[in-house]
Image 1 (cartoon, rainbow, N blue to C red):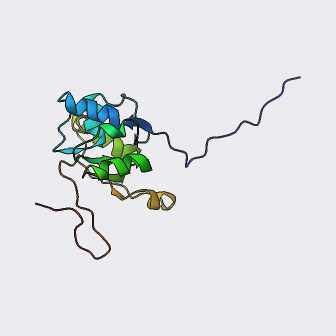
Image 2 (cartoon, rainbow, N blue to C red):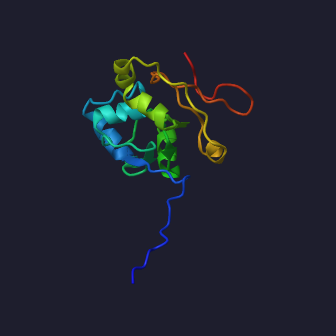
Length: 162
C-alpha cells in the first residue's frame, strides 16, 4: 500500500529575504568597499560582497552589529527590522523599504543582462495590495544613486535636500 501525502504548498505571499546585518555593512564601509556618503542599494550590497549571489525576493536589513553604526548612512532595502531602523536613524541616516518584483530585482542587480539581450529595462512594478503597507516606495530603475527625501505629514521634506 502506497500512501500519497497531500503535501502543503508554500503560500504564494511568502517571500524569501537575504539577511544582512548592520555590523557587516559597517565592516565593509571601514574596509572601503562601500562609500557611506552614497546611497546604499541592494546592488551596492551585492557588489561589495555583503550578500550572496542568490537573492530571491530582496534583502532584509537586520540589527546585528547595530552598535557599530556611528555615522549617517542611507539605505534602500526590501525589509528592515525595528532595531536596525532605529540604529540607522539614531546615527542620522535613513532606511527606505522599496518594492521590486522578480523582473525589477533582476534589472537592478544585473542590468547588463538586458543590454546583452538587446532589451529595455522594465518599468518599476507597484506592490500588490497585501504588501502596500510594508513598503515606503516603488523601486527605481536603473539603480538610484541619491536618496529620495522622506516627506512628513505637513508635506515638508524631513531630510535636507540639495
